[in-house]
Length: 412
Image (spheres, rainbow, N blue to C red):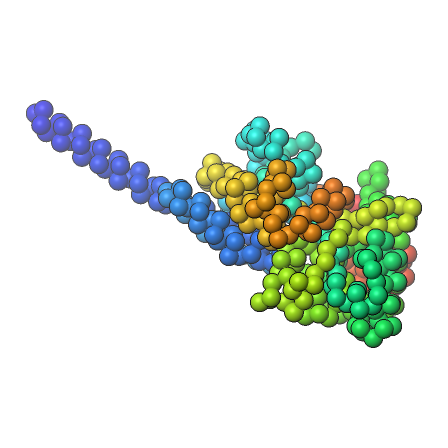
């Protein structure tokens, strides 16, 4: 009797162990990432492999989409009742995602170490209405990249510190026959153009929204679009800029076909890679310029965060994965395409070595980051502004009329 009871208990124990092991093996997280800029797909896969090795009871399915598909993929999956546990999201979406219960509020999960160690500006990426909807992961702004060799041949001793200087230097380079169109921008009818526009709005001291209403039709908002149109019409800007996304700009610059380009952090090391680039070793980087009497430099907040969807069935495992992906150790290891969110990382030689010039620009640029508008109506506003920029560049509408039309169609 004792023996049979013991055997029954042992059998139950083995069965429970077997079931538990089976259940753990079946804990699968689905994660949605971006297939452009910042960390590469290989980086994300390597980071994830390190997590699953340390957590063998969790499997992570990775899906990569272009930035332009990230928002809609997230929202559509949510509407169908799930699909993703962890999603990458832009700094412009927390207001909308919070209003529509897309992401889980993780304010209570954030440790004291995270609160004190992460750069204050990075937290704005995941915050809305006093709550935090994930962890900042990509800390980014657009910088002015320049080709040192071309500037030297043109007799230009230092890169521009104002946008007017950039226009003047581009004209010198063009007039000397060094490049036909020295400037490349990301002005496709997409969010990329809004990031370039925001950089200029910050330089001109403009505002997007005031008292809940559009404020970009006058002042700095109008000055920014006028500068874009003037640059486009001057003959110094690559005419294909109106169709370029950031990757197009990178390719043009590293082929030696641009003296100046506005782009994200990731371009620095890729453009300096001899396997990737014809201009390796000639790449300069500084914060985006300012406007005399208004600003010393300009910058857009292009940061992104990782959050848990409200439909996730595994929020604890999803949070553990996010903690791993955003940890200082992980970020320091992969600091060549995206700089860490942790303040002390910028004093770590493992992070700074070989990219001292970029780190110097980052310390100034990241401190000047200007936000795109925080509103649950962001998608409508962005779409209206993208159309306004295209119409103005193509001469279909004056900058004044284009922005008035955008304000009317902004949903605000």
